[in-house]
Amino acid sequence: MENENELIARILAGDQESFAELVETYQRSVYNLTYRMLGDAREAEDAAQEAFLRAYQHLSRYDPGRSFKTWLLSIASNYCIDRLRKRRLTWLSIEEPLPPHPALSSNEVEPEEAVAIHERYDAIQAMLAELAPEYRAAVVFRYWYDMSYAEIAETLDTTESAIKSRLFRARQMMAENLRTERHSSLIVAIEGA
Image 1 (cartoon, one colour):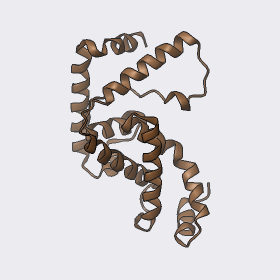
Image 2: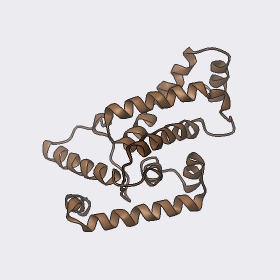
Image 3: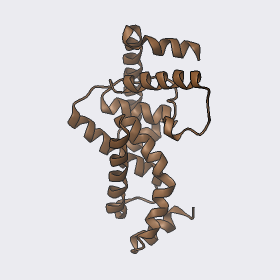
């Protein structure tokens, strides 16, 4: 892809087709984030489209000194947090890198391994669904996107200490949850990994 700032300048000058280049470049990252945040493929697709629509509508507010990807993921995560608050759900997380969504995986696996991966994936997604939206966003950015505390803080418009606190509390909640039988299959999966 050409220089993002040049591409954005063309979009701002009225070249709407250039926005398709940005969408193509970042659609997978945005969808992965929205899926991790919302846990439902259809809702994640809608949220990803909404994030791109909002990015397009507010492109003139983009600061070229910032990473475009960080700005875009910030829009997507804030939209997801708003949707989750409306649902009034609570969530939980895990302290290991999250597995890719099965639809995005290209490696073929044996049926037994596929079942084990699917069970582990479902258990992780269930645990993520038990965390508050702010905690979940921090966990997804840290363990799915491997972002630094500073990058997460910038994306979520908060401080690094707030991010560290959210991640610490999320890990505590996850550890407590692992002690219950509800996620005992995940303990077996983690210990077997």
